[in-house]
Image (cartoon, rainbow, N blue to C red; front, side, top):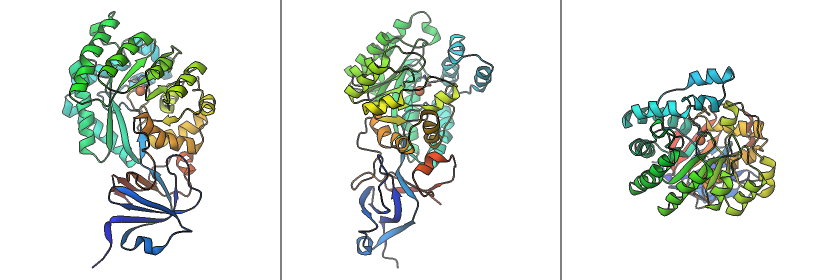
Length: 405
Ligand code: NIG
Ligand code: FE
């Protein structure tokens, strides 16, 4: 009979990226149940430490489970035809003005039942899990009625119950102006503030509230009203801001203590200072930049110089970023935006967690939750260097082994 304790596991000779940096020497990592029990360098390692531990192997790279802090994974329909139109020169804004874009997805999402949306989203999330994700944020924003927004959030919650991944939900009622409110944008914001936010809070369906602050969506003043409604229900806030133009939404969101400002290609020095002062995270979304063939770069060097933490996420959605592969974003963040591989990885672990209000998570240290990935690579930079599925050797979610090759 074996006297190993399946609740205690050990990895030997492994390089560890701890969520912020790569530890300088090969380590031994020990987990006990749902937690990391200890991290010791192989120089100080003593076999006595791990007597009875289940042997999880040697070599490779360990990272925290990936955190994708910005997705729109729940939706109906497809927008492949808009992809073709954009390639022919029609802009994202023009498609939206013609009633396509987000509103196309709204129609398809309203038509779909909760069960149908669940079945559509499940394989998308399973693919992310197979890519190493252990925490994912999912936004509403394609319902735009109280009932349809709650329906989307319920699907998101159900996904988190059905699959071995933590789902953090965000109400994005102020994503686009629904056709029923055409030319009554303020009336729609009233609905978001007076009905949607309270309903989502009451049913505990939203962990945060988001807005799309942009000329084709809502003004800074309208977004501020949504934030005030969120604050009245003690919900944290975040914003899609400065994606297509510089309206000052980021600075306003930061004044309200936003967890993050996302996209921010057009962010200026004032916005950067506001993020720094508020301790908000800048969420970089290279998938949308790539898909929309944007040319305006987010101000990475200035954010870095200001010490603003940068998260990296997929923005997975049917329009601006139909890219459901978090590890690809590590590569794009480096190639398109010149993040270092370490910055990109921190952006999808520790800083991604902070952008979700989970400060201190997405890290590996004694006592941390054992959300872990072990990769068949020899240096953490290799994760960003190559886009190569199949390198995930093991994945642990809250100490449970969910993937092993
Ligand atoms: O994050 N910017 C606004 N919202 C989404 C796009 C959603 C869509 O096109 O369906 C984004 O890019
Ligand atoms: Fe988005």
